[in-house]
Length: 239
Image 1 (cartoon, rainbow, N blue to C red):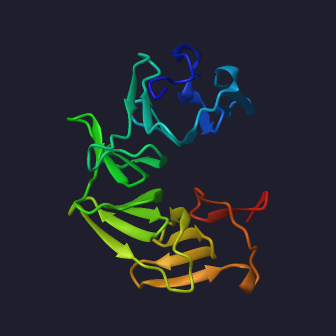
Image 2 (cartoon, one colour):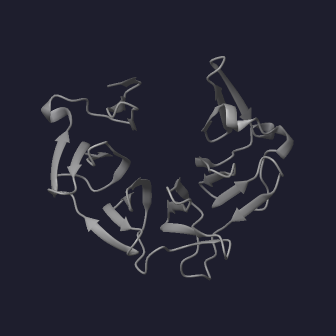
């Protein structure tokens, strides 16, 4: 049932003192103080269908799922809110959510079937721009923009103008964006089916790193480090 959530609220850990990770069957709490990893599985190890999560500045936990839209949980009060797909509404939140972020001004954006923004006055997710951006995989804030990686390429949403601009990649690069980060110089780094792509949005220039030029052929994740460098996950390792 879409109305059920697998964890009793009393079982939630203190998320303020630990890093939270998600999997298909459990939330995993990593405690940096004692270097422990503690799994909190759903009762009877039922599928939790979690794909992404956000701990916002007000302490709420937002969880994107593969089947049930978004769940918002206040660990202090135990209040749970459900944001579900409504086929009758044009800009309804989709059931599949792959990315959730909070911007510097406190707004919550999500991506999945399409690109959404949370409207606190109406307590709903809706399109932030008149034109829909579909099949969203990643969201990254940069200044007043949100970079949107999708299964059909790269887009930029201007939060001030409420406009969306397409940034097509060259024909020799696959348009499916699976990972997306922005470095300290404003350069975008993406994982596509073609390899890692370095994209300069000002010059509209790209560099491709894959097995054809001496790099590993399979990349899994990108992470911006505190010192500005970009780390990439490869076949169980990291570069």
